[in-house]
Image 1: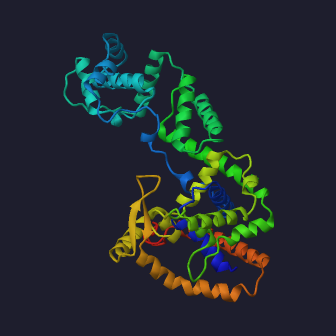
Image 2 (image 1 turned 45 degrees about the vertical axis):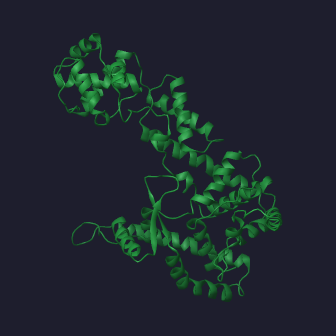
Image 3 (image 1 turned 30 degrees about the horizontal axis):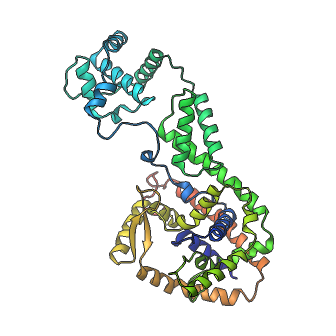
Length: 426
């Protein structure tokens, strides 16, 4: 076991695509290894857990892409009383229209959307129904003070008392309770919305709710790591760490083989599968290690081993290389023309892409780093025992963290000549 081999294989565990076997034991074993890798490097929820929930997958109220004529008539037609109320509270036609658009939007959605997000057809309909013509009008507040005043007027009209501290407390309590068993961010947001409606609370903005969900979900998931780690003996930890060592010849680790899917059904393959499951049983008492953790969470940790290590996004790659995203984009364009990598949809967040090495790119990469791994394995493993290697690895991690901290410090310093930051390397 060598320092280089260990460092390289842990990196691979996060960056290589992996398929998890559908068997219960495979999922538990992968989950445990995922926990060990995450906990040993101080990382938490960087894959599945770090994704941003798409609003389309939640029950968060929003305007439909196409607002039908029936919905306009039933939900966005101001009554004579509402029009008279708006005119009595404002002095200009534009403010009357803005107030009415927000009034009907709040009545429909339960919160105040950005005026820019209100469909044009809704604005035109409200304007026409209020007797102000049917021409296209750009509705906007002339100042934040006016927007605040309009929100206060509408809440008073509906008899709503806005208590941001209570709203946040209700949402946080609901998310934290649900996160003990659920893991999908969209599900957690939906639970919070249900509780907010039940408590007659005005929901906060979606970005606020999404950020709250991500923070609480990470805290809850991270809380499981010490509990599992405390149940694994030093010998069992060493056995799990051995799974991450990559063979310099085959370029595969035992962890890769652990995740091999079952092959085509036959008697011989069935026997191999039984042997595979027996080998998984031999890793340790994973059911005891994961005792008390909900099955949904175990599935999440197993999913992290499958998804978070699939590939890096361009932004993540730029952070690893200490380059700006612009520089990385230029580099990736050149490498893509050489057929060394491809851009593929992110497995969780469809708004993002990930970088996958082609077979040729992987081959050339391993041709470069393979000799280093082989020499490290041969020359270092014979000189140091496991405890010494752990000490060396800890030293290297600490030294790297110190250096990175000072790289960030120097990077943020303005240049003496222009007083501005450099735009090339970060």
